[in-house]
Length: 497
Figure 1 (cartoon, rainbow, N blue to C red):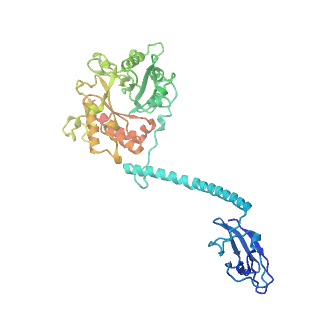
Figure 2: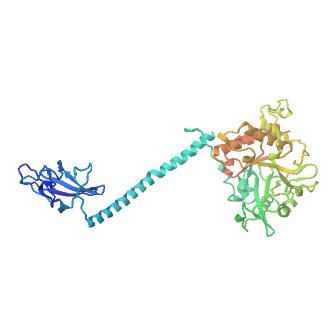
Figure 3: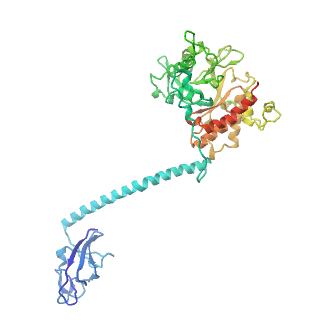
């Protein structure tokens, strides 16, 4: 509040009293004010659109217009000279309302009012920026934490569980050509979903030890392009340049000079020469025509003997296993009954069979390890299985895949229900009985603790491959240890001599 102070010097009266009066009124109706003090001060302020009379430092009040006239000897001060008019308010003891009209002063007060409002808004915005934004962020992350608690993947209070960092040694490998670019990566049961979206397609997955990569191919202008949507296609990113040529370079890196390149059965990974790499080709355009171009562009791999194939009696694994999905024509794939090097991606959700749980410990699969769980037991069924069981079998298909979200459903409270576990076990059993690799995609990706939990459960229950987008997260040390402990250990112990 703007105040204009007026100081009244000591008045030459005996009782040190002074008064002021309004002009233009009879003495009996004049306003007067009495106050005490050697240096009494009164001020003109503003409240609720009226100027108020305030008295400092002593007490005083303006009498109403029926009060007595000023005493003799009191100095009269004309209120009109100061443009004073009053309104009732707690801040001043001014009772009569004598409204005046001062256009210039009203304009000045209007300008001051607007300035004060602008300053007030600026202060409010500054306070919101200083205090409001951090509060909103805290609320947002608090809601996320509560949601994770509801899902059951974390505790409401502090969780002391330590997260083991990823094995970055796998990413810091040599940039040399061929197999040296892969380093000493340990194969893991993971499939690089939409691999072409990685910074370095194919090589990034191999450096992390992935045993499968996926490429979405589109047929345009008699060539195959790689991309998730038509709008994302580029002439510089073709199926041949992104996957076929790099694979040929890797597989022929150790070929002596002067000799014809030939796959020797050493595999992609040094530490696991028998491990095949699955190249999953998702056909996005016309199935028959697109498949023909895939067969044509993989001809060199075929001539080098690098593709796994069916010879009419059994599957002969090689360095690369070619699997077609999406718009892949099943009839065209199985047309040749004596030789196939392109396999079909069977629908895992259609292969469900009632799981036998628990399995009798007298079963031969428990001969070497009585501590095997249900998933490990189901995984051993792929050895010696009748490959002619129904239409989808090892002679026609390699993967049996399904969307986790569509077939199993959403995971509430961070744990799979009995019904969901029955679905997973039945699907895995159906794939194993046909000699196929059970693959789950569209696994929950958030919260990350829930994602890791689902990964762990699927591998423990016997799933062969998981489609993931975050390569580094899938290759985290704590996750790979769990997979090796629960999935590969049984293989080492039960592998025949």
